[in-house]
Image 1 (cartoon, rainbow, N blue to C red):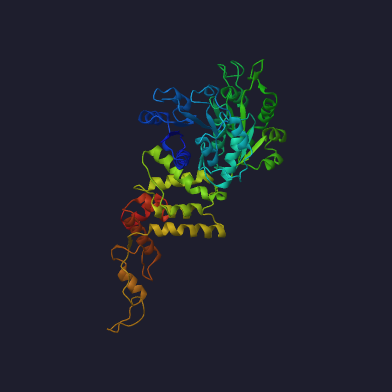
Image 2: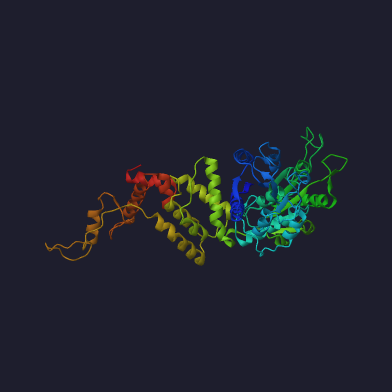
Length: 514
C-alpha cells in the first residue's frame, strides 16, 4: 500500500488531508513539526510526502536532506505562496506538485493521484485567484494565526491568499479585538518577505516629540540626548513588513512625512544629509470608521487613499457566532499551555457563549475565559461560574438580553447539582389556619422559628426560603448556601454571587463567620 507522510502544523488541515488520502486508498501518517517528521521517517519511509514549508521548528525543506528519506518519494508542496522554491525544481523524484493554500479537496485528490500539473504553482495560483468566497473550497477552521470556519472568515482567508504574495499596501479595518494584528502577521508569514522582520507599531503610543526619530531613526548628535546613531522602525523592518496599528492616532505632522515615504519609497534619518531606501511593505489598521476619521481631521485624506490599496474588513464576533466555540476552545488551549494545566468548556457552554454579542470581541472573550479558568477547579470550567460571568457581561438591550438569558438555559441546567438549602416549611405552616390546640401560627412566627435552623444539603439544586423572612436573613442564607455548595471557595462564591471579594468578607464578618 502506498504510504503518505503529511507534514503540516495545522492539525485540522492535516486531518483533512489524511482523510482524503485514506479515501484514495493510501495509508497516512501526520507530523506537525520537523522533529515529529523525522521520527515518522525512521519508522516508515513514505512513497508520497506532502510538505508544508513553514513549520514551528524550521523550514520544511530541511526534511529533504534527511538520510531516512529513502528513494526520493513523490513530493507535494503545500504553501501559501504561489511560487515554488527554485531548489525544488530539480527534485530527483520528479518536479513536485504544488498546492496553494487554501486548496479544495478536488485539488488535493488530483495531487494525490498525480493529475495536478507538475510544478504547477502558477496554474494553481491562477485557479485560486478565480475562486470567489462562495466557491466550493473546503472551509478551514484555522488559517495562519486566525481561527474560524464561518463564511465571513473564509472570505477574509481568500483575500489574504490573494494579496499576501504581492507587495501592495493593505488596510485592515474592524472593531477593537477582532484580530487585526493577527491578519497582518498572517499576511507577512505568507508573503515573500516572511524571512525578514515583522515590526508592529501602535501609532497612538508614538511620542509627538520623538515620532520622527522613532519611525525614521536619527544620527548621533542630531538633538539633545542623541548620544548614538539610532535606526528607526523603517530600518528595523528592512526587507520585511511594517505594521502601523491605529493609524488614525498618528500625530498629524507625522502623517505628512509618512505620506512622503509611501510615495517616494525613501526617507531620511533625523540629522542626516542623505536619503535611504524604504524596502518595506506597509500594512495599516484602524478600529475607526475611516471616512468619518477623515471628515473629523484625524486622518489625512491623501494618506487614506495612499493606504487604501487593498482593504480587508474583519467581521465582529456577533456576525460570526458559529466561530465562537472554535475560538473559545483555541483560547483555552493557549491559556492551558501558558499555565501548564488543561481545562475544557462544558458542552452546554457553547450555545451560551454564542448568544452573547461580545462588544469587545475576541479580547473580551479571552478575558472572560481567563477569569473562569482562575476561579474553576478540575478539568472543566465550572458551569455555574460561567453562567454567572455571562450574566454580568450580558448587554442591556431588551432583544439581546432575551437571547443571552435564553442561551444560558442549557448551561444553568448543566450546573444543577447538590446545593445547600434550608429545611422547607411543613405543609400548612405560614398560614393563619388554627392548629389542633386552637393557636394560630403567623408567617412571622414561622420565619422566626425557622431562622436558626442549620443549612442543609439538598439533592434538588435550589434554595428554599420561608415567606416572611427578612431580606438580610435571606441574603445570609444565600451567601452561606453558595459557600457550602462551592466547598468554601470564597473567590468562586464572590464571582457566582456577583459581588466583590471584599464585599463577601464584610458579609461573613457581619455573620460572625469571617
